[in-house]
Image (cartoon, rainbow, N blue to C red):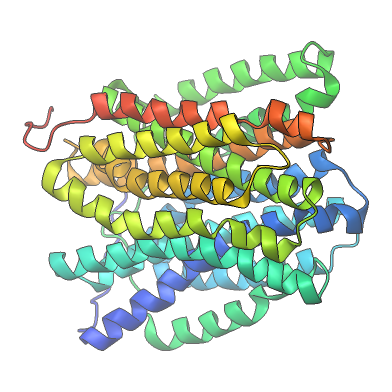
Length: 466
């Protein structure tokens, strides 16, 4: 592994360290905001560009697929060439891509611009977290900083739908992209002023072959989920896609198992706790993205709610996630991952079960809000123990790789959930359809799968395996 000497870090005051945290956490907020704000705007985008649900799925998933596939590579580039440099490049790229989205004359141009946003977003969240960790060497202060960092995700979930609904109340759908420009501009100025440069002591080697294969594999899997409902599961194109998935998967495994520094360290999957944690991360974000996208369409298109009302309806989900995330961290630290994983699984399954059993176009709003709150509580309890389970028993240098893989798994879950939900809501207009296809059973199954992760997780006092 190539070694890169890190420059001597300046001594940072407490105020400077927390300023760095606020600036870097804003990037996570920006990435989360952009996802949720666009979800609320999808019906308006469809009407404005005269496209259907399948094209709108690509508007969301073009961003998510690229973001997921590049997370690990962007972190490696930052360690090698400088975290602040890559972070600034990501901010500028995100701003320019947002302008391209806002000015897109067609859905094809919008999808391409969203993919460019995904490239830039991959340079923001993981790199910014590395900057925060480097700036806070004290373990206790670092733990508090990471707790604040985790809570920002919930805040972005709350702000995105409401901000999107407010913008759409006064402007057209392009405003949800224009709003990024002043936020990015302010962030670029603040990063230049307050954030010092840093590099990884051991820069990971790049894996271009693995990177290309991973991106191709994710695009093909999600593409089949999006296109199969229209083309038919036995059409030649879909069958060819299945063959392509098998071929790329084998090629990816062959490449990664032979590299000294692979993009995805497949040998980690031999550890049941790690494999279960990755599947759990996928499951949580499938449940979350399915619910959010279906809510967007069912409330606006089915019930005739305004974008602002539909966005506000998601607030209980965001509040539950924001409040319970730090509590989950405390429980994980004191009791190990099993208790919060069980809580996460029970609450997510309960939320999906309520919606599955009760959802019709006439379901009272209180039932919807209660179901979203249950799901949000489950999501809040899930993230900390999943990460803990993934890295349990690993040395620090491998724990970082494991954390990167679980972050990628979360984005893969988001992309898969959007594709599944989009296929289910395509053409949905009637109450009968809404009741019949709402994937509450899928959300409940995702929650119950976390109980399996809890079984695989290591108790707090267990000795790590080699």
